[in-house]
Length: 155
Image (tube, rainbow, N blue to C red; front, side, top):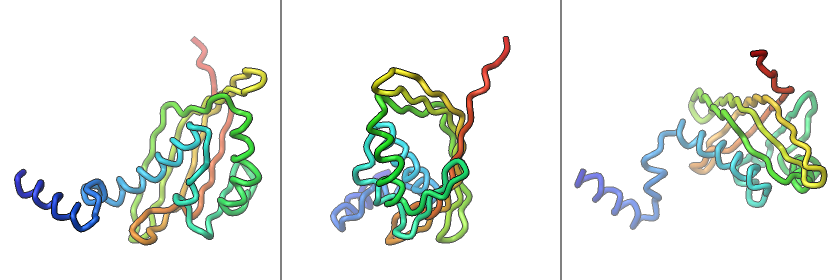
């Protein structure tokens, strides 16, 4: 334990965050995906470009949205302005590593409450993402997400 503390102190002095040392690549991929999800839940895409490659591509429910920059400018960015809240429930993520690439599958239920009407939208969703490691950070290269109405159980 003492050796780990000394190593972390030395790495911190060299400017290497302890969290980055402690996390595996798979955990770093999950951290990137969760950070992006958290930004959406906070109703803000500010600074989220860092989670995407410059040549990223977003696909959503049967449509190619373009790059992440296109997506935030013409789709999700303006959409968030109409939301009172946006939350994810039952969020699960599985990651498969392949060298400098990672393949992730996320499943969740999201709930949106609209600002003006108070209408509640609940959808079951899934996303598949391909991430690439650039400059020591895992970034989303391709993301394809889709959703459908939540099936209510008949009890």
